[in-house]
Image 1 (cartoon, helix red, strand yellow):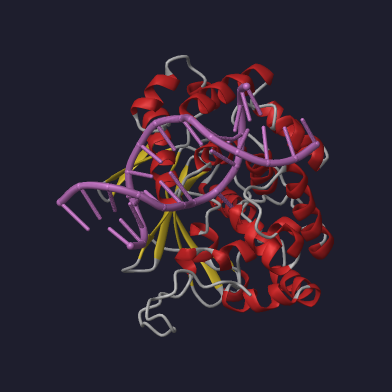
Image 2: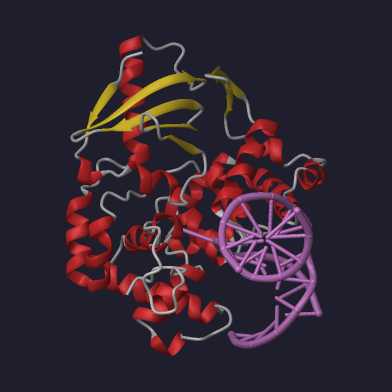
Length: 329
DNA sequence: TCGGCACCTGGATT
DNA sequence: AAATCCAGGTGCC
C-alpha cells in the first residue's frame, strides 16, 4: 500500500507527544519502523512523519463513504485527518506567543515542539476520561480497548490484530453493562460508565453533544458535570479535547503541582485541590495564555509527564540514587 | 461552601 | 518474589 501525504512541517506536529501524551488512548507505536496505528472515525489508520509531511494509510474503514468515488474518498479521508490534528492551526505562531507570555513555557516547549490538541470524538473522549480517574495511562489504555472489543464494531483484522470502533453510547447504556464492566476489571468506574451512558441517551445522544459544542464553555462544562462520575476535571478534558472549547483547562495533580511551584506559591502544600483552588488555577492560566490556554497547558503537561522525561541512568546526585522525577522549574 | 475519606484495580516501584 | 504504592478524580458525608 502506498502512503498518502499531507503537507506538514516536522515542527508543527510531533506524533509521539500528541498521540501518547494522555489525550487519546488508542494509538500504538511500532518502534521498528516508527509507524503509528490506531482508530478514529470508524477507520483504522497508519501514520508516520517525515521532515515536511504527515503520511497516512487508511487500512480499513466503516466510515460512511460507500457511495462516493475513490477520488472523493481520498479527499474525505484527508479532511478527517486534517480535522483530527487541527492542521489548520499554525502552531508555531502560538508557541511563539505563549513563549513571549511565559518563561516556563518558553523552556518547556523547546524539547516539546509540535504538541497538538487533537479534535477527538466526544463519545470516545468522555468514556475514556471516566476511566482516567485515579488511574495510570497504561491501565486507561487497556480499559478503553476493552470497551472497544466488547461493545464496538469490528473494523478488520490486520497483521494478527482485530480492530474495533469505539462503541455507540446506546451499547454502553444497557442495563447489564455495569456488572459486565466490573467483571472486566473496571472497578467503581463501571457504574459511572453505564449511568452516564443512560443519561446521555435520555438527553438526546449525538444531538446533545452537538448542543454542548454550540454553548459557551462554562455552560457546556456545567451540563457535563450533571453526568454521574464526571466532575470538574473530566468535564474540562471533554470541553477541551472534543467540544472545541480550547480555553478549558483540566486541573489535575500535575497541573496543581506546576501551578503551586511556579505561579501560585500560596497554594503550596495543600492536600487536595478544592473547587475554589481549581478555578483559581484555571483562571490564572487563562489570563496568562489567552483563549487557547487549554492547548498551552497540554504542552506543559506533556513536558511534565514521567514517560517523556529523560531516564536517569547514572547516579549523579548527592545521595547516590537516581532522581525520581525531573521537575519543571 | 469546605474538608475528609472511601473507592476498584493492576502497573510500577521497592 | 511479595508487598506496597499510587495513578491526569468523584461522590458523599
